[in-house]
Image (cartoon, rainbow, N blue to C red):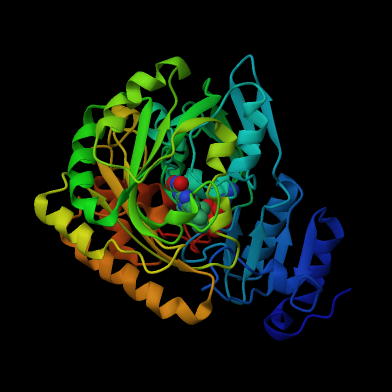
Length: 466
Ligand SMILES: Cc1cc2nc3c(=O)[nH]c(=O)nc-3n(C[C@H](O)[C@H](O)[C@H](O)COP(=O)(O)OP(=O)(O)OC[C@H]3O[C@@H](n4cnc5c(N)ncnc54)[C@H](O)[C@@H]3O)c2cc1C
């Protein structure tokens, strides 16, 4: 038996022994070897000391952990990939339910579905589905958790063609605050199914997702890089071009510093540039034609577009963000980029470090074909979501990258379409959550009151029970 000290000392010893006696996964206290590693999350700015970290092996363990947390009166943090910007995957003095042992993916190629455990990473899904030439649209870094990304919406290289990740969710198994495990789908608990498609981890712990898959295997993808002084022209051209481009073509605008590594040519290393990061998921033999107007525009420093297996492309930027990177996030939904909005972008766009970046993702196409109140994710009419990420490996630069992100974020706020993608912001408080969900907020609060009346799951972008 582990002797608990520090914050964990207030845990009831008998209750802890009871939990351990049936738990099949790991139970890690503050004195246990591995505690310091287990408490770390992706964002190096987050440094919290939970009383207990558990790693369930299965849904039964998740139920036991929820019961333990509830009965001991502990704050409960749920972790899948641990990528949450404000560190919602951990909590001081509470219990972390870390799903990282639950990463199984089972593909049904005939039905074109994938059953994905709640702690899987995007790369686990890509690996499993690619074997069948199938894919689910998700995010652009493969070690992001399916759990947090999906429950918040989920956008990436395939969004224009296939919609948000939630638009491809068929059902989920959810462990509620009561400890009951229920199915959420269009037919079973449809209100819960509505709420988890954008409402984050507010309603329970998803132990398994069922996704619809699509035939996407090889994509034609890569960046076109332009000199920073071309940013204004590139933004003007891109926003018009992408609006009429075929949905198979995704392209997000970025400010960045060229990483000092292949495949980038040495003469561009560490140069501040702007870029459009393209992904074409239509027939490969049509790609030349689709990219013709892109090749014809401006004078790119690099035309880096090439055919790639989707999983390789979705993992292409992983190396930039090792665990422990200092990160400060700001975000905004945007519509039309006016001349003034573009000049603000240009004024702030010179990123301070090689890991810092700003992306403007198009969220039109298939995203717009879902109604504003069909899912909790309400921003079905906006054109773009921007994320500004100050990031660096050195804690000494934390204030500098935060100041840049905050300055850029404040400057674009007046042009906001209202609210921000919940997965791209720090903890900015209740009003920001309410603004983002717009007219869906009240319904979310009512559903929260039904499934989690005491707000047991509150370490998240919190929706308070009505
Ligand atoms: C490097 C990087 C790249 C990113 N790229 C993209 C991108 O391309 N597209 C995009 O849409 N987003 C992207 N994001 C944002 C990402 O979607 C969010 O950070 C998301 O919350 C991460 O999910 P996670 O499971 O890794 O995080 P965690 O920190 O583990 O969890 C985040 C939140 O979700 C809840 N949660 C997680 N799993 C479950 C579950 N199974 N059941 C219930 N609640 C759960 C947690 O309680 C927490 O509140 C990126 C983030 C990073 C750090």
